[in-house]
Image 1 (cartoon, helix red, strand yellow):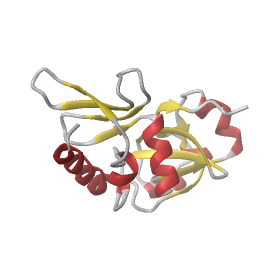
Image 2 (tube, one colour):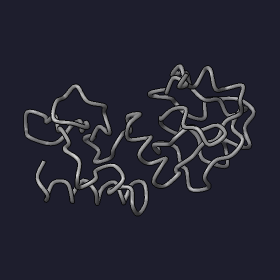
Image 3 (cartoon, one colour):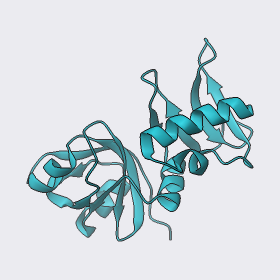
Image 4 (cartoon, helix red, strand yellow):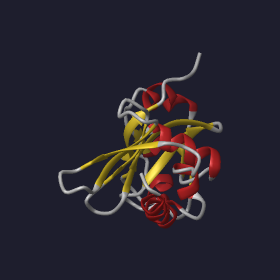
Length: 158
């Protein structure tokens, strides 16, 4: 990945997740591997030189990123947002990759909208990454329904 492409991807990340997200996801000192479509557009960005590395993000045809666990960890440590915090009772399910339900949401960043990429947390621990299915207000107001469609969960560390 050349410098120009890294800067372009950083700009997209800053727009989607907020200022500083681009540098957190794509640090200058790290070698990143890019899988491309047949037309040459970036599709998956992983850490390291090979495609066996941890997936940071996928770059969709809609011009938005979907987060991998590695990308979620980077955003969580650098920005701490966009967050959907769930209760302890959800931890084993969400870390296993199951969806987070509205009745267990304790707190959510006010600017989360349906379709946004979010970090699912509990007690300052990243549990999963996924796509918000409800607005921030709906997540805290509703007693039923899927709040976050979890894409990848993070098994608890021993």
